[in-house]
Image (cartoon, rainbow over the protein chains, first blue to last red):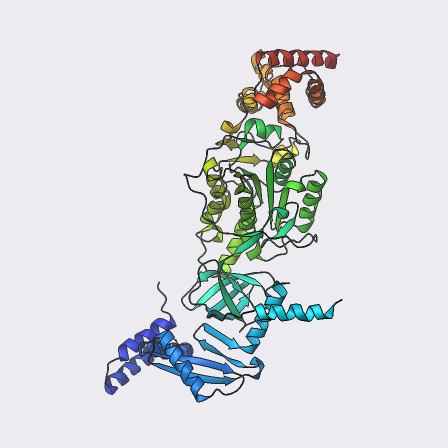
Length: 136
Length: 500
């Protein structure tokens, strides 16, 4: 028996509601709720919604990027990061989520999905430590 | 200490340092249990790719699912916790190899555990490799002298062969393997002993025995002990064969012993069940045949154009109450080129090694046997089989004809001759002399209880008096008419003195 994953459900919801008007969409939502109730999947709703959000972002050319830095970045740097990321991932929109982390010492770290670009001073020091140990 | 130098050196190193930044694929640990971790992320990971955990432990990706990756942890998993960030390395699991690994005891990931310091690493070898293809191979035609009479004469093993040693617990399976290693001294053979799920005390005993016999100089021990986690037991045989391949790539002959593959299959079953793979027969996963076939296919003899060298594999499988029709024994029997079947009954009858000659077979080894051995051992297997049949039959009647009586007497002596003490391997030429005396009927009038004494005396006497015969066997692997005349005379002389 095939198992329907949360991702499959989220994908189905997206395809069923895409290109529909408001009334049609509310009809679909009602059916989705009934389906989730029948299959006893209410406990999976947060994960399904998270996946649905990712699917919508993917289809609409949007990405969520987390930026960790020691202090708030200036607008020019942020603009440059957005431009670089939209080129790299070929997307129309980049949504930045800024997080302040003083332990990074300087620079910043970008996280997009499971990809990480680490440009912090902390990471550089770690690499230097590795270099000095391995090249003794 | 010159402090100025330190500062200068440090400055230079820092100047030379360039921190390259690259995009890294990371994942997060979702759950950890019994040596297994479920990791989210790591979208581009390959099967069997190495993964590093923040505490420095290594893992291997085994299950690639839609949202998560099932990872086996090779080491201490108690410090890994939920939410830990893991990184993919982009490399298939590798182990360090070098010539200095000889004489060492390493764990399943190639790290020394014998307290003799770190290894000087020259190269790394992937633990999973596709077995050499047909074009690169050569048929088996060089013998592996085990030093055990019953094996070298009746179930001969060739270089590049895979011969299974199978039997119940406490029947002498490991003893055969260890004797074989001990007998490789001066035979131009590198030995790898892979211990899977064995007690540490047993391993220590084996190491000491090999050390005493001077065998550690050409031996490597790979150990995944009973106290270690299932992932380590699972990869240990692959590590062993990779070490073997390192030496085979130098054109050397390698003998590898997997002690034992039943425990290996159990470790793999444990991992598979924890990874929620569907269980099949005896709860083993569906790919348990492939688990062993891909391992044993790496044993081969390569032709000269591809560097020569060989890997001979002696896998060991433990049976339960002599049941060879269980899942793992039948699998490994069908993969290997023959089996040495050991029996509890024979063991307790005092027939040691407790080899059941009827059920044991070597499918390719006879072409690797030297001519002299082939000639003396030609009818031995048949004689023994007939003896067993007659022995059973003779229990019912007392009136036996002369030829039957003769066959029975010969059989008793053959069984006696094939008995051998542990850790006492016998040179091929000495085995030839003994079997020559047996099959030509020189032992027929020696009392059965004095056969061992006769054999020992004859070996010593012929060594000093049949020089031509010995020289011919060592150099041409067969005796000439002159050699035959000489050995016959020597045996008769010795016998005349012995019977008196």
